[in-house]
Image (cartoon, rainbow, N blue to C red):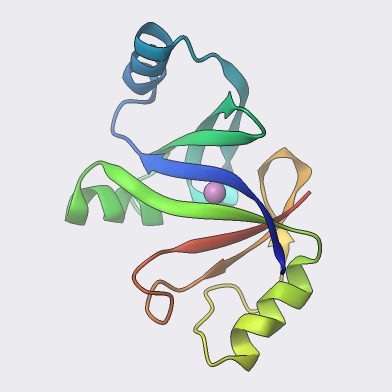
Length: 133
Ligand code: CO
């Protein structure tokens, strides 16, 4: 079993401040980590829920994949991040089983993690992020 935990559930939003305020006012959630990931063209806010996070994501530029997602599909669930002990091994397992990958090799993610994305086509319509801490 390579998946050790749900690391985060990512939700694409148009207005990050409004989404943070919603989770705070409605459920009492507070932001544990906030980061602009320039390479992905996103700003994220992580709200801790037990040992996992809700990751609110908003684009920082028009050509970011999240901007395209919002334009095509609107706000909502964007991807699920599964925690793994070895991102490279998990990615190889995806390829060995005929899955499509977005990242050919692990790369830096937010919070100093190592990540790789798996294409939703071949993964039952879910964009999967493999997250190694
Ligand atoms: Co993510």
